[in-house]
Length: 263
Image (cartoon, rainbow, N blue to C red; front, side, top):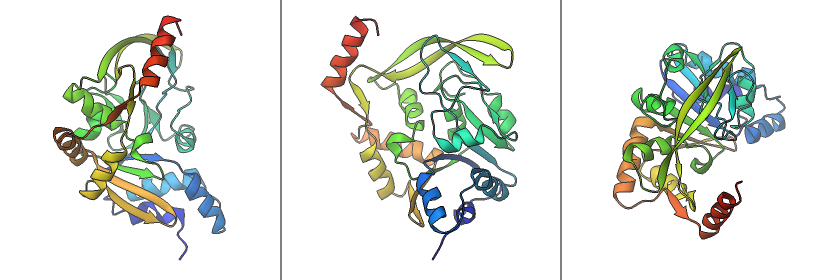
């Protein structure tokens, strides 16, 4: 049986008032679409979600993971590092981009104004996009990508729990919004030297206990979760000894050498 990508949003059981965050690698879905004799159109894909979420909110990440302390975030032109769909959505006039230099999102719908008004000195703080997703019990749809490469929300949980393997770094970043340029203090709760993210066991655990629902759509693998349930499940996982990281001596040494030579 062939599956049209335009039927995908309607197959997920979403409600019209839901708040939905999409993380995706759309290459497999686009490949399968072409094999079925269709052409994949990212605008039509987004509009299929908007139709389902007629009184809801749609959020697409537009993170800029390549920026560093002292860099400039151009709200209009800084290219997202979160994949092809993000870059396509950024060109749409019905979506607006938030001003967080590191973890901006593109947003459309009922709660858009509230999301655009979010402001927190910490990119993973309670008034960040991640705190918002937790508070409103938003849903996350993960298309053909694992948690290791999509679940930035986990760092919000780590900051709330004040884990010892992460440390708050204080950056000054510039934000360019049209012709208005401001300097913004940003707290970035990030890994200590030698620490690497490792969410593979967490993913298995959340799938096994039902926090993550795995859905097959053609050859695409879809994971779906609710942020509030995921938060509680991660806290429980860590309390029972589960880890969200591993230590690499090689990475530790490389980091120390870079620091010594000023890179």
